[in-house]
Image (cartoon, rainbow, N blue to C red; front, side, top):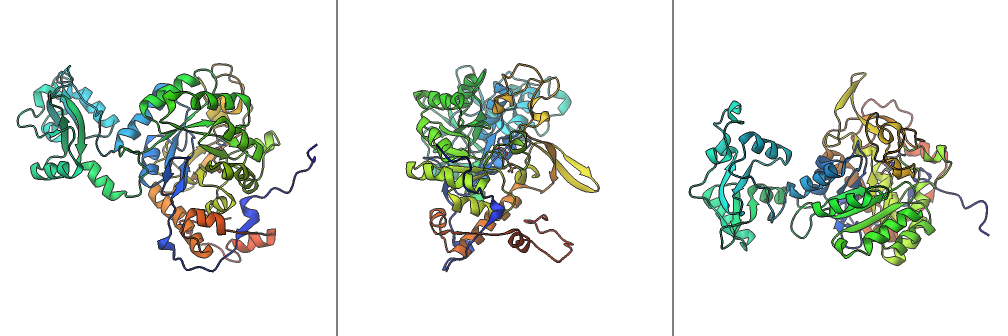
Length: 498
Ligand code: RVP
């Protein structure tokens, strides 16, 4: 019989990392880490699958900066798959199935397509996919908006002297042609004149601008998306795969549960999903991690109750302080070679390092990213300061939106998506300070990790995991850690008060 009282559980604030002898400086370290068994990332950070944190703009910005975004699932299947599509098309080496328009489309329809996908122009193809022209903002420049409904693509597109390349062109040759003809888009055509791909200047620029971006083998940004297991979950899973999702995150508040494990087994045993990795969670014990590993996950996500908006530990009285949860789960993950995502409860950059030393390979952030410009929702002004809304996926607002079908109730195993509006919330709704663009925030968070690696003498993430050691601290130690005996008059970009 297991003991009634387990060992003491520790949170991030209960410990500090010991400094080690070091011959590393912060700018020299390498933060490359495993997201899943086969996907690596340059920064160990995921943005949370929450409706106030991750939609396409956040996912694009996260991947460009070396992390990854997990698209939330409080959206229709079509809308979520569309978000995947937007990220996958946002930038690439060579777009093999470019978005196109037909010559008879109106300019209004074209304009809508361009703004949805944030592109400045499209190749024009006939019904046999043969390239008949190209239309870019250069062609549109002198068209009056009131004519958009009247004029068709064929009226203004460039059709004479089209600059194209062969389907198997090299990156270098493509660059040369783009430069020589001073064009921004190079359609690639096969022997029969059919459109076989597209290369754009924007993608060359972006590759230089974001050298650490998380990309797939075809040079497209990687993206993850959350799914459940009730109702139409399988349909959602298939639609996300068809849209090109890299990672499915089977997202529940209790991952050590039969329905959830069944869903993981189902995806992993279907060869139609060979190209897609699966992250399962959340669990908070070694046994929970082992169950997910046995079901075949490519990474385990850890965290029951540490989230800044989470009330599971008070509503249900269940949870494990996050540092201990990560450590215990890692005892199952490490021998199996399955990466671990430490999800929730990160207040400061130092907590990221603590999560990694405890056995995490990456961390998932909600509250720290909800205030960035790329998070969904508008800024709100409160007492002269700017804020953004942040709410738990188990909050009343996210679980039972008035007059709308709810999608996240099954995260808490509370009935199926179409049933009544009654819920037992396990989260709250609130506001977090507006923090500006995501890359500023990530710079501070990853920069903090570089400092940890310098203090602990670790050049790489595996070295940090191996060398890092904790010292437990008291309440007095925690008070001493934060600024004290001073009235703070200016907030630092990476410190917002105790
Ligand atoms: P935090 O970064 O501390 O804000 O936590 C974010 C995490 O909290 C999410 O990734 C998710 O695991 C969890 N979460 C989301 N909604 C809720 C809730 O309503 N209880 N919890």
